[in-house]
Image (cartoon, rainbow, N blue to C red):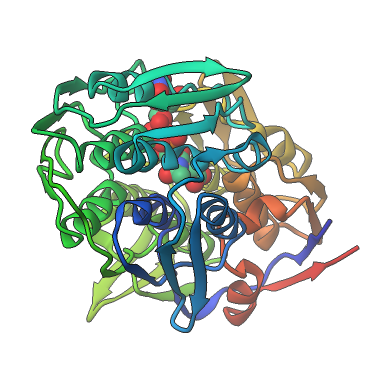
Length: 421
Ligand code: EPZ
């Protein structure tokens, strides 16, 4: 198992390109199961989760190849294979997003029911409710979701849950509805940019999806979709992670391939903390004053502050000049990084879904353990600024969602090495 050894204290300076969004690319690759002919997806990051999705599509009868310009080509060759097995799904929850396309295109799907994960309980009841509303028969057999429905029929579907809408649930229902008979209306649809990107992809394929990016989507079913070429949007979470790295190290980092219009809540919060964020000519320069102001952060569905940057901003606020409160409204148990940050000298108290952070003068390097993707990113960020050496073990978590993060950080002047056992 690989680990990172980081010597803290280097000021990050230079330019880095943000990759394509993992959370766009995953459902978009799954949506390619709907197409006739070859689909080409550009700017797909080379990540463990993307490789897992490519292998899953292979299990489901698609030929998947990776070419230059982070290009992935998908061509379905055998529509008889419809089983997403547990050993795949348990490694990557986003496997669930083959359910909608399989059902919509092939009329049947067998997908292992995902279990819990490090960020808390993650049910899929809303996905199933939406697909049932389209007329699918769904039952659980031996831990698998078994769904059938020869031709789905458009319906009115409400996708709100106790913590807001559902991103992959919206994706699944949308992907099943594009080939359904008649019109589907999704109320309380997720508004994330990744959903908009998926809708753009489906529409280029010939689908008729309206209202993506708003809570009310209207989908008119069509008979057939064809393979097209599509470039995925830049990863707003990778961009936010590098912005916070610049802020923590009093650095000056220029980001290219960044959509700050997808990150208004993040940019606004960073400015409140005293970080300068300026965009010109398609690039964004992030630098920080020595003094970081404390603030309150509450995670919310888009366009609110994203849960996928909660751990990273918590690391930043560990060094702010005063008390901050960070409240998690999407995954209330997503605080595995807190105990590890305490090992590095942070002052954090947990009260229910809120972390109260009292800024300290400095963090101190320590051996720490990554528990999930974004928690690992938060530990790497803390290591960049801690006094002495930090070892982050189990970095396979970070490899799931950040492409060569240590190479990118090193190009900005960080002292970070990957050690393989
Ligand atoms: C997506 O997960 C992302 N994953 C997550 O990113 C992200 O944290 C999350 O959206 C929220 O923004 C991908 O896009 C691959 P949800 P998803 O369904 O779609 C509850 C990362 O680090 N819920 O929008 O699975 C759920 O428990 C990952 O890159 C139900 O109650 O999340 C949560 O409280 C981690 N019933 C809330 O809704 C359901 O059927 C939002 O979850 C589904 C969800």
